[in-house]
Length: 97
Image 1 (cartoon, rainbow, N blue to C red):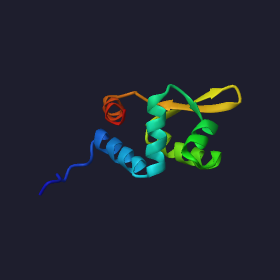
Image 2: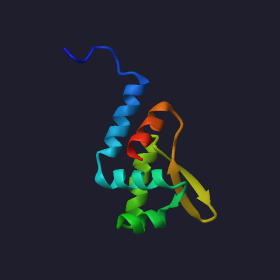
Image 3: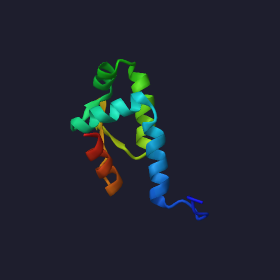
């Protein structure tokens, strides 16, 4: 049998969350855009992806929950950037970029 009967590790759970989040074409596109720039605001992402601000915000919540992006307030705007806080994320962004 390929899978062991042990509980998933923290890295396993992180990868499951990441792959679940990236299983959507729009979220992958958003993440790819964010990985090419420092900070992008929701309205700019909405324009580039071609969906509403609310739609982009919903997708960003999922990416944020998976630990892939982080939110930054710039005045009244909410902007996002990639979150490179661990080795898994660094490898992922290297692969995407």
